[in-house]
Every structure is written in structure tokens, then in C-alpha cells.
Image (tube, rainbow, N blue to C red; front, side):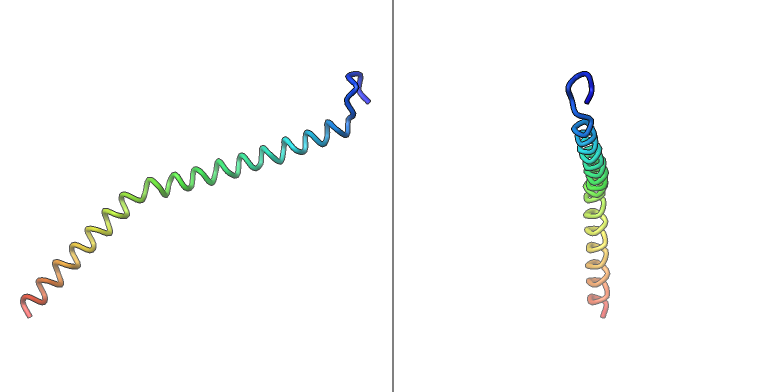
Amino acid sequence: MLGLGIDSSLINMLSEQITKQSKKVDYLSEELKEKSKLKNQVPGLLFGGFIGWLLSTLLNSLLNFGG
């Protein structure tokens, strides 16, 4: 027992809980960073997909028109 009247096992338990919560926050922060990266890539992927579709459609039209 400390002079403050706080049991050392209580302090250890609180310390473990703080450590666990800190690890959860770190994990969620990393997950959020990953999702943010994906969110930033979506417009580029959509634009690239649209260009690919457009080129494919044009080539099909040209090949079918000539054939």
C-alpha cells in the first residue's frame, strides 16, 4: 500500500488497461491511414478505368466499322 492509499495492484491494473487502449488507438490510427490512402486513390482509379473503357469502345467501333 502506498502513502496515498492506492493499492499497487490497482495501479498495475490501470497501467495495463492504459497500455491496451494505447495499442488499440495505434492500430486504429494505422487502419485510418490505410483507408485514407485508398480514398485518395479512388479518383485516379476511376479516371483510369474510364479512359480504358473509352479506348476499348473506340477500338471496337473502329474494328467493327472497318470490318
